[in-house]
Image (cartoon, rainbow, N blue to C red; front, side):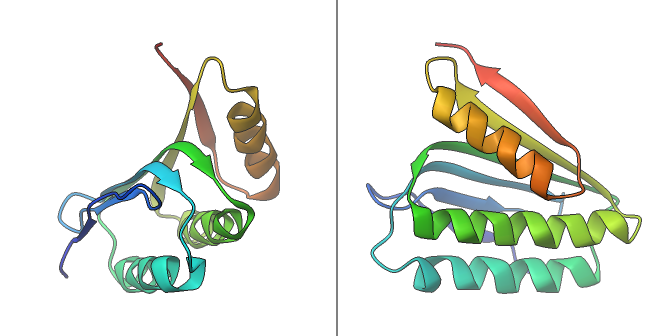
Amino acid sequence: MESLIIESTNKTPKVFFNALNGKMELVGRSIPENSFQFYEPLLQWLDEYAKSPQDQTTFTFKLDYFNTSSSMYILGILKKLEKMHLEGKNVKVFWYYDAEDEDMLQTGEDLRQIVKIPIEMTELES
């Protein structure tokens, strides 16, 4: 399976999904013109990955900001990771937030309540 790497733009986050080591991350800002067009290939990639995941899957969210339509897809990503977790796969999720950004902390906390998967909240150093 090929890794999925998409460089960030001023409206979309960097996507680094490494199929070989199971490390994945979304980094930056997510305010795409068309969230479906941006996120649907990521969700499809995760479906393929889940068929034969690595022994350890690590997903890191380091988002500065995301809009409402992106939040639905972020939840979709978490739901796919949750499914793997519930199937007995070793999945870890890290949610990074800036110390000054209470909204991003709260969003991570809210998502942690929605999905049945441990999400480790990590404050970024300023």
